[in-house]
Length: 165
Image 1 (cartoon, one colour):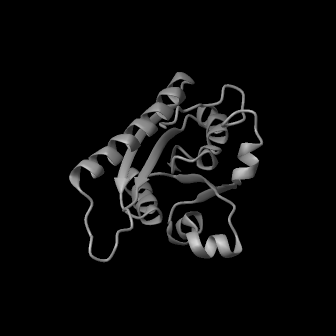
Image 2: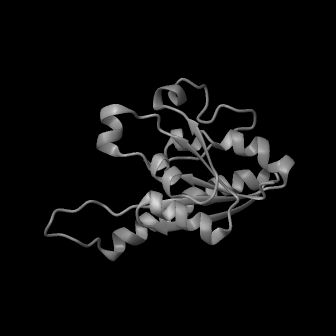
């Protein structure tokens, strides 16, 4: 039985499309939900291999506020939730966070890229699936599917997170 689920979010509506599924299962199964936001390094020109502390702090604060807002709405629906923010490469950090948190399940949506899009952008979901020792639940959702919904996350009582401009 799954008792602790790690839910990686990248700030996109596609990633958030997993939330209704989590709401459906977390309460009845008395699951703890761990929301994870990975702050990835900014690709820099060869000569610039650092990110200034102010930029790093701002990106971390934005990530913390993002998962905190979603966590607050999940708590309002009586879901036990914790939040984590990590720095690094998404797939590696998701797998490490799941292991460290003792997660029984990783649940995430995929961006539904294939072919050239996957070759250019890679697939975090595919990398997590290959690396994880924890069972992984993947839900495919494309930007077009998510945009076609009437709300950001189409579900009764859906979670809606305000975006910064």
